[in-house]
Amino acid sequence: MKINRNYLRLPDNYLFSTIAAKTRAYQAAHPQQALIKLSIGDVSRPLPVPVVKTLQDASAEMGQRATFQGYGPETGYPWLKAAIRDYYQTTKGVTLTPDEIIISDGAKSDVANLLDIFDPHCTVAMTDPVYPVYWESNVMVGHKIKLLPATAKNGFLPMPNRHARVDLIYLCNPANPTGVCYTREQLKQWVDFALKHHAVILYDAAYEAFVRDPQLPTSIYQIAGAKQCAIEICSLSKTAGFTGLRCGYTVVPTALIARGVSLNRLWQRRQTAKFNGVSYLVQRAAAAVFSPTGWTAIQRNLRYYQRNTTLITQTLDSLNWSYVGGVHSPYVWVRCPKGQTAWQFFDYLLSHAGIICTPGVGFGKAGEHYVRLTGFNTYAQTRRACQLLNKVLTQFKQNI
Ligand code: PLP
Image 1 (tube, rainbow, N blue to C red):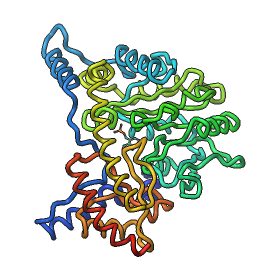
Image 2 (cartoon, rainbow, N blue to C red):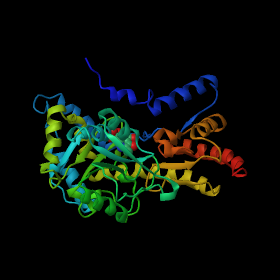
Image 3 (cartoon, protein in one colour):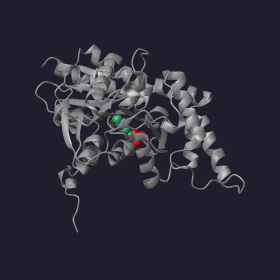
Image 4 (spheres, rainbow, N blue to C red):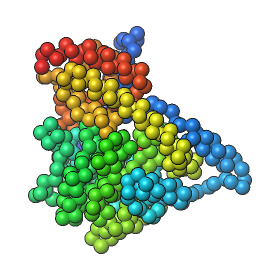
């Protein structure tokens, strides 16, 4: 029996497990201290009323013989696909057909599972720092990985290298962890590069709903030529508080043909073979998100998180502290005090302010000397954290 030895190349602990273990140990040693979590990207606002009401109604339907639902279509119910198609048309000016939208249980599984439809000897480009799932899932299948450093030098937005040979390109926009966002002109360069080199872009739009500036792209299909070279992966996790419910969708345009083969057909084939679809209840809840009352309620939650990130960025601005992100994203990418590594600064913030952050180096080598803060906690907790941040960072300011 042979095992997949690529798994042995993975680090033992997933980043957030390490943070949780360190936090538990600290809390056990300091049981009186209240800790504030500005680390993991999980939402804190409960589901809005229209979504909860729909879940209740759909549950009642499942208990009645006449309305009970068994297996649904593997790629999603037509009414949810139609709601997403309309969302793209009205908010993004992008025309899709329902066949191009494939409903999933979230973006994490799709960004990893999509590798099933590509050759196992692909060369894959991704940024450094990066959402760890891209890197880990590509290590698991043995792909060659080319890292594109996202640093202060390139505004944390790497651009294509004309000479690079790659088959797949992961772009996360707005980016996790740095919180920065490519402009339409910058995305156009990536699309042109992919078309020229016959590469496919895997565009992760998990945070598209956080974009505030209408000039910035919320879908790669707003860029001419993208339907011929890009797959877009979306999630309701952060947009609508579905981290616990689980629902997302992936758009594979029918115009996307690689070496004469339709990638839409391959992805549908993969999903029908290996996935039995998202539950009826969850898909009903997802459709409620796109209803007028659902969408209004979702916007309130998004504004709530944006108010939190604004508090964080205002605190850093008042200290003249170096950071990026936090405007079109729930993430703020904060420079560590001079001479401190990311884990040292993590320990410092934990022990001096009781704030839990995410060390940037956990997202890749180029994330060293940065930490990620999120706007996903409650307003009261975020305000308290900002007061504490202000206090501890002021001491460093004199040292920078
Ligand atoms: N993509 C990015 C960039 C993320 O940051 C996350 C979650 O944090 C996901 C995908 C996963 O989303 P989902 O909850 O839909 O699996």
